[in-house]
Amino acid sequence: MADIGKVLRDRLAAAFETVTGSTVDPALRRSRFGDFQADGAVGRPDGRAVAAAVVATVELDDLCSDVSVAGPGFVNLTLSERALADRLAAAAADPRLGVSTVEPETVVVDYSGPNAAKEMHVGHLRSTVIGDAAVRVLEHLGHAVIRQNHLGDWGTNFGMLVEHQAGGAELDPADMSAFYAAARRRFEADPDFQERSRRRVVRLQAGDPDTIAQWRTIVSTSQVYLLSVYDRLGVRLRESDFAGESRYNAALDGVVDDLLAKGLLRESDGALCAFLDGFNAPLIVRKRDGGYGYAATDLAAVRYRVDVLKATRLLYVVGAPQRQHLEMVFALARAAGWLPASVRAEHIAFGSVLGTDGKMLRSRLGAAIKLTELLDEADTRAGAIGIDALKYADLSSDRVKDYTFDFDRMLATTGDTGPYLQYAHVRVCSIFRRGDVDAVGNDFAITHPAERALALELLEFPGVVARVGETLEFHKLTTHLHAVAVSFSAFFEQCRVLEAPEPVRASRLALCALTARTLRAGLDLLGMAAPSKM
Ligand code: ARG
Image 1 (cartoon, rainbow, N blue to C red):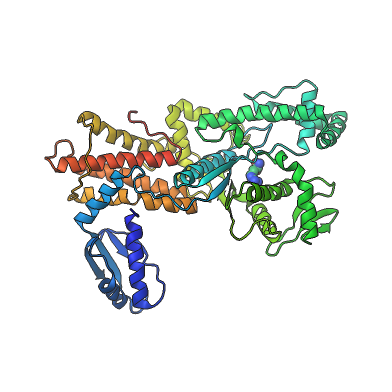
Image 2: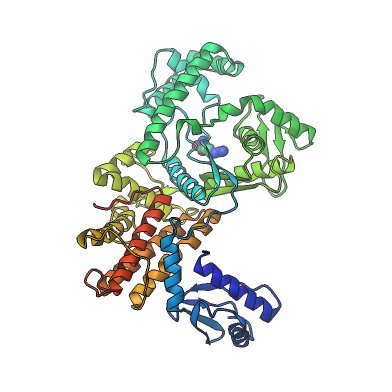
C-alpha cells in the first residue's frame, strides 16, 4: 500500500490540475490544524477560491473525515479513524512496513576510498559511514548495488614506499603512519634514496615482478588495516569490494587515445588537458611527464562501471572539495559518450569534520586526527553504542555542510542522538517484557491525540525511505526516526498501555509493536544496532 502522504499528494495534485489547468505542487505537510495541510493555493491572488474549488473537486471520502479551507488558501485534512486504522494495519501486516520496492537499477556506490599505506582520516570515515547507509537503503528498495572502494593504491609515492620496504622496513597494520612518515623522512634526507625511489617508480610502471610483489605487500597489508576498521564500524565493505586505482592501469592509454580521437584533448604545457565549458580550470588527463593521474583513473572507472558493471546510476560519496574534479570527470565522460543520458552520475558530497573549536578536527598535538583514535575513544566511552552514536552523528547532520565532532553531544541520551533512538527502542521492548506479551494483533483504534500523532508519524516511514533513496539525505531519515521516538515518548507519558482496558490495550500494543519495528528498520538502514536491552 502506497504511503498515505503520497496518496493524498497525488489526489490533491490531480484536483489542483483540474481546477487551475496547470501542474501545481500541493505542498502537503503535517500540520497541527488537522493532520495534514496543503499550501499549494497559498500565495496566489485567488488562493482561497482555488483552495475551495480543490476541496470541492478532490476525491478523499475514503480517507478523510474532514477537508476544509482556511486563511488565504490552506487546505486542512483530517484522516478518518477508519482510514488511519486501515493504513496502520496494512503497514503492520507488511514485513517491509509499507516500504515498496522500486524498479530495480544497478547502482555503483563508490565510497570509503582511502589511500594505501596511509591512515584513514575523518573524511574517509564520513565517506564510509554515508556510503554504507546508501548501500543499505538502496538495497532495501530493491536495487542491485555494487560497492566500489576506490582505494588510492597507485602513483609515484609507491616508488618511495616500495624502496623503503625493500630496505627492510615493514608496514604494520596496527600503526600505518609510522612507515609512511619514515619513508618520507628518508626521501627528504637522502638523495641516493630519492634516486632509487624514482627508478622504482619506473620499474613499478613497467611491471617488474619483484617490484610488483613488494607493492602488492604494501597494498594487502593496508587492506588488512582497512578491513579491521570496517569491521569495527560494522560496515558492509568486504575485501572483494576493493577496486583500487591500479585496477585501471591497463585502460588508461585507451582513455587518452579515445579522447584524442574525439578531439576532446588539447596539449597545454606538455600535458594533455580537456578544456570543458563552464569550468575555470582544465582537467589534466595526462601529465607532462607522461604519467596518468587521478582524473584518468576516474575516467577509466566511469567506463568500467557503465560498460562492464552495467550500472545506470553512479554514486560518488566523496568530500565536497572534490566537486569540481568529479563534475569535470562527468562532463568529459558525457562528451566522450561514455556516460549516456540514461546513466545518472551523482556526487554525494559531504562537508568537513570540525572540532568543537570550529576548526578542522585535529588531535591535541595539532596533527591530523587518526581514525582509530576516534574509534577507540567512542569504544571506551560507550562500546558498540559509542560507534553507533558516531555514525548517527554523521548521518544526522545535513551532509553537505561541515559537521562538528563532539563526543559529549553525540553520546547524550537526550536530543537527536543515536543513544536516544536506541533507548526509545529499548523502552518499547520493555513494555512487552513487563506485560509478558508475546502476540500482538493488528486491530488499531486510534482515539487519543498522542496516539494519533504517533500513528501519523509511523505512516510516514515508507515515504521517507523512498525519498532518501533518491536524495541520499540521511538526515531526513534520522529526523523522522527521532520524531517517531519523541512521539512515542509523548504517547507513553499520556496513554496507559498495559493497564488500559481492552480493546484499547490491544490497539496500543499494536502501535507499540509498529513503533519498535519502525525504529529497528530505520536504525538498520543507518547501519546501527537496535538492542532490546541496554
Ligand atoms: N582516494 C581519494 C581520496 O582520499 C578518494 C577517492 C574517491 N573516489 C573516486 N572515484 N575518486 O581523496
